[in-house]
Image 1 (cartoon, one colour):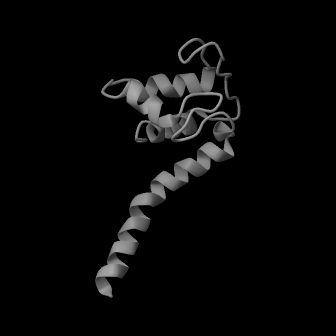
Image 2: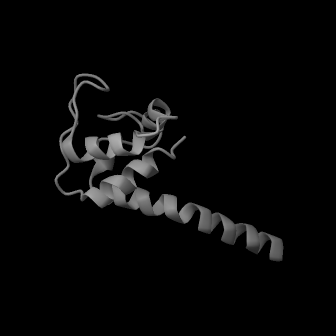
Image 3: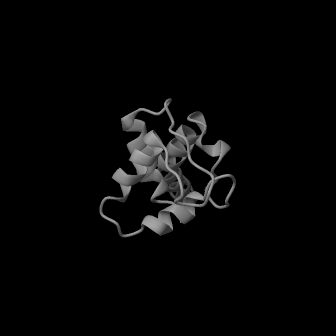
Length: 101
């Protein structure tokens, strides 16, 4: 019984930060165009993470794209700037996106 309880508590602690950032992405309307594991209007977050994997400045690049928008990186549909996201939230979102697999 103790082992099962420990496993459940550990899983909750490990997934809590991921869920918090998913919540932030939902609150900031990112999930209207993106999903973690499939392409919607924009690329899946797991595909973004794979594309930027191993790049030292990936989090900063992604945070800038969240704030300012971008065009042509994933096809013809532009990603608009997201004025409702603060710089701190953009950095949190970028860091979270890069953890998706």
